[in-house]
Length: 260
Image 1 (cartoon, rainbow, N blue to C red):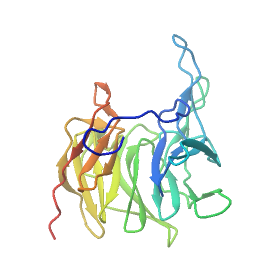
Image 2: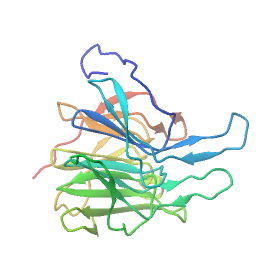
Image 3: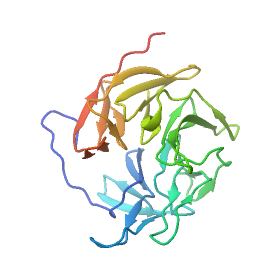
């Protein structure tokens, strides 16, 4: 759908039925990474399995193209583009009804500027989390919140610096309980925005010691996506409303300008 008055949704070539995947845009193309699918029929015991599939959609050709798969199947992850590189962080591997999920301690990068694409492993993150969000600020990759193997929800923000190859800590995301689960992160105008299931929108700038609350969603939503519009509002897409189910509304959220 084009973001103009009177616009309507149009059907595009679809891919496999997946949940818990990462979806991002770069250089006019859309990238789909990982996710999980079901292998059971309706009424049978749940049999969920993560996939390693990676694909790119080219609007000019109106078709999907298979890219090198992830080194291992992964879902409940997130990914972000920095420069010409895609960074994949967090997640686990669902291995069917007879095996326990395997939490991933690794993170990967794919350099889209290379003639031959191949995933490369990053220095190991100092955490294992899924249902997190990943964003970019000041040339660094931010891994925000998520759930840990022991079932606790984290409000931690871990930062990877591609220049030094090192991980560090940033300001903890405000909130408690489930508020670090299924967040959405998006960078715009030199700032990093995060929204959570408490319907709050926070902003962080480079060098800032704490997150600032700058907006409010219309409902408690998680596993959604945020992007920015031409007039610098946040566009909220998809996800699920807390305790209600999947959301199909799309709307904009104005955010307060940060005072210097």
